[in-house]
Image 1 (tube, rainbow, N blue to C red):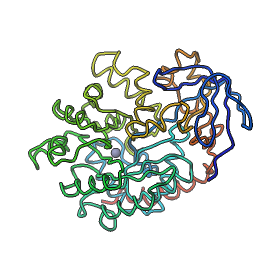
Image 2: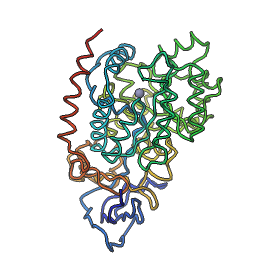
Image 3: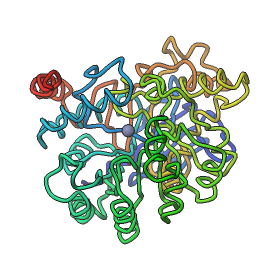
Length: 437
Ligand SMILES: [Zn+2]
């Protein structure tokens, strides 16, 4: 698609998330999808000019862990722990068609865009369908093809071969980055895991996986192998940079040190952990201190049950503070970092996304300063409002690569009523499969 005409937004409050974390009133100019001016008095020649003085500009959020195609499964398995949750989910999954996945992904991506999320890291199968939905709605997708042992999958064909074909089909795409996603140690043998890692290295992609989400997973793995999951991964030579481990709740000090030393990225998913009663609280402070980059993920709407990164920031902050009897940990600024620039770093894209700076991709939200959840809309309180107070409805418009994807709370590149109607009708068969034992 051709680049949009240059865009200038004037006199807005810019939550830059640059190295100085400046919040300043000023202009931005976007050309060919990138910021070419951030600060006072942008040149306006040849540009569409938007008066921004009632708005803040915020970098697009990076959702570091989700299964966006599960958009049709919100509310399908509430109020049970992970084992019971997965039992229902696997049964429903077996009934899913590729079309269901695409329709679910459209619903999920629509929800994310309307909530200011412009990039997301996904783990699922039929990722071609998710890639098509990503492209159609205008998001930026980092899409991991789920890899697990051949005898444990509902995929047709060998998962590793499917993953490799997916990498080949989408490599070099502008808004879709394909990657490899071993689901977790509970469904991946040593050979499967190392095969996934080798595939990711050969294609120079990220590796994304679930790690130590529940005590049961940790204890069962320990009973089987004699090692806790992160130590086992270290010993088989699986850990390294360009990896994102989701959850990382049940870790020992030794495992935290190993993950930090190997520069493994962590996607913290507090809402999902709390709702599934994982019991512990991810050691976010220790992981960061050990050198791991930590981002924030919503997980799916089957376990969260929202894709709102604003809700997730709020939850992440409150849980860490309360758990540690220390209100100073994970400050509002740090929470916003997790949702933006640290998420970008997790994806190896900190030079491209995650902040409003000259040269970066113009992925940003336009936030209404007159919304009730932003009063008083003072520059010095804006980061606090984002972390603790703001609702998704305060987001007026969203841009990806300088192109509008949400304008005045309506999707630009899809018709929400159609997305919703397709989701409602596609959910029928999946919900019917729920009760089947
Ligand atoms: Zn997950």
